[in-house]
Image (tube, rainbow, N blue to C red):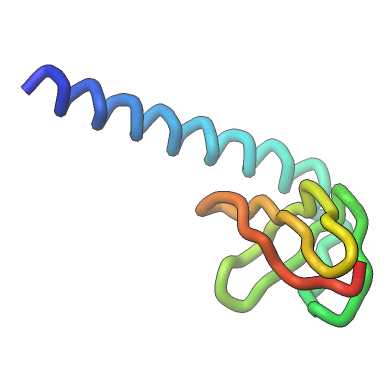
Length: 82
């Protein structure tokens, strides 16, 4: 029972940390938000709106055609024209 409780508490903490990181990042960059388009180039820090995942911030670019975006539900790898 204690292990189950510890695992649930750790999962909750991870979710809260992810939410706080996303909120902090999105609030800093919200004014520059634009729609996601996989045929466009992106830069770290760009805010994009995605039809399924919502608003997110570009965290890292992986040439030639991938980037990592931090969304409220976590980081996702998406295509781009980098």
